[in-house]
Structure formats: structure tokens, C-alpha cells
Length: 375
Image (cartoon, rainbow, N blue to C red; front, side):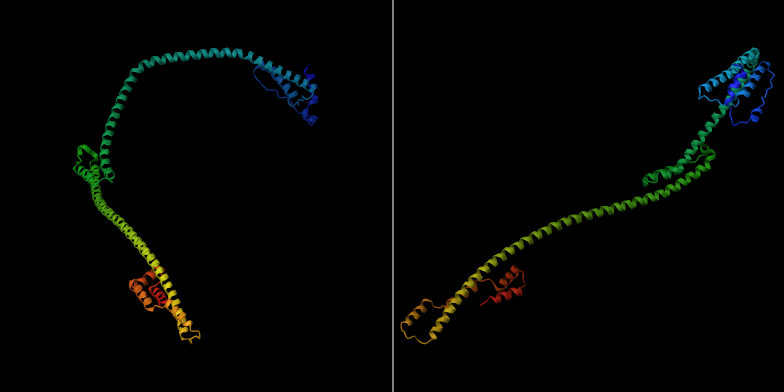
């Protein structure tokens, strides 16, 4: 297909929004070049730019796809021809470049050879100079090292004076006294301290002053600690004595409590015994009182009968006399029996106290109770 036919085939695919004036206004720009081999290709490129610069490719249809492939073939033909022309046009220049590079290498090699000849003359002189410079630098470095070590040694001595007080801040008074003596015996020699003699003297004097203060503080601290230890020992002894006294007091309290419990138990037992005895005595007395009451009633009845008029029937008198003889009222016997009970009974105050303890009442209340039951 010719170029005119291709252009007619794809003209329908151009953007319809463009006016005919816009299309006609595109004027191909021909680039000027002094390379004759590229001039035909420039004309082809101008043709491609004019024909396809604003081409809209529609590959959605088979016809559009075929047209697009034809356009691509047309463009590639120009590109392939341009590549072949470039290879052909570069051949003479590449040969010249190779020749120039060979000359460059030749110049470099010749220059290096001349340089080696010059270096052969320069090297001994340069080595001698560098050796001397190295010797001078080494000697200077050695002197600086020796000087640094000397200064460092002097600084270390001065630092020991400055830090000795802090190092012995928590030591004993004896240790501080020993190091204080050593510092006082130290001598600041001019040949040893040189330009640091004044600084060393000041550091030594300050160390002596600080150590003396530290020694006084250590002595006071140890005296206070010894006093505190003595007080603590005394306190421990007092606590031990108090503990022993408390233990003895506790034992005594327990003994007294046991005795009190035993005494109370004995008193309670005695009280129970006395209460039982009192109950028995009261029961016996009650029986006696009942018997006495019956006797009194019988006596009153007999007296009433005796005071009554004599009965008509004489036979009644023997019966009365017989009955009186059968149940006589022996008042002296009753009194004697009461006297026996009174003489064998415990003292009245003991009975009152037993009753008061047994019933947990006052002595006056117990005495009133006993009075209430007396005959």
C-alpha cells in the first residue's frame, strides 16, 4: 500500500472535533542537518509526523485493528531504515576513534616511561628526606611521650593528695591517723615535682588539713559509738533483768493465784460442809420444833381439859390420867436438849459468816436471817 492510500485509509479515524482549518494549519517542520545520510530519513519523519501525529487508533474493530497494524509497519520501516543508516554512517568515525584511542594509549605509555625515569632519579632523594622527617617526628613523639608520662606521674601524686581524705572518710580513727602520718612525712622535692612543686605543696597541705578534721570526726564518732554501745549493753542488761523479774513475778502470780484458787476451793468446800451441817441442824431443829409444837398443843389441850368441869362419868378420870401419864410433857428434858445443841454448836459469829459467804449476802443480812429462825 502506498503512502497516499494509507493516509486515505486512516483519515476517517481522525478526531471529528477538529475543523478543516486546524488540519490544514499543520505545516511540517524540516530539520536542518549537515549529515547527508540522514536527510532522506528526515523527509520520511516529517511525513510520519504529518500523517500520524494526531492519529486516534481504534482497535475495537477488525478493520481498525488492521489499519493500526499497517500504520505501525509504515512507522517501523522508517525506524529500521534509520537504524541501518546510523550504523553505516558511524563506521568511518568509529575507525577514527580507534586510531585516536591507540594514539592516546601510546602517548600515555611514553609519558609513564618518562615519569619512571624521573622517579628513579627522585626516589633516593625523596626517601632520604622522608626518613629524616620520620626520625625527627619519632624523636618528637618520644619526647612528648616521656613528657606526658612525667606529667601524668606528677599529676597522679597530686591526685592522691587530693583524694586521700575522700577515700578515708568512713575509715577508723586509727587508719586515718596512719595515713595522716604518712602524708605529713611526704616531702615535695623540686627535682621530683618540677613546675608542679607549688601545686603539690598546696595539695599536700590541704590533704593534711582535711585528714586532721577527718581524724577528729572519726574519734568523736567512735567515742559516740562506744558510748552508745555501752548504753545499749546496759539497756540489754536491764531488759534481761526486767525479763527475769517479769518471769519471777509471773511465777509468783501464778503461785498466788493457785493458792487463792485452792483457798477459795477449800473455803467453798468448808462452806458447803457448813451449809450441809446447817441444813441438817435446821432439819433437826425443825423436827424438834414440830415435836415441841405438838407437845405444846397436847399440853394446851390437856390444860383445857383439866380446867373444864369434872365429868359426870367417873370413869373418864382414869383415862385422862392414864393419857397424861402416857404422853407427859418433859419440859426440862427439852430445855436440856436445846442446851446441849447450843453448847456443841460453833460460835454465833462463825455461823453468821458462813451463812453470809454461802448465800453471798452481808453479815447483817445473815444475822437477821438467823434471828428470824431462833426460838
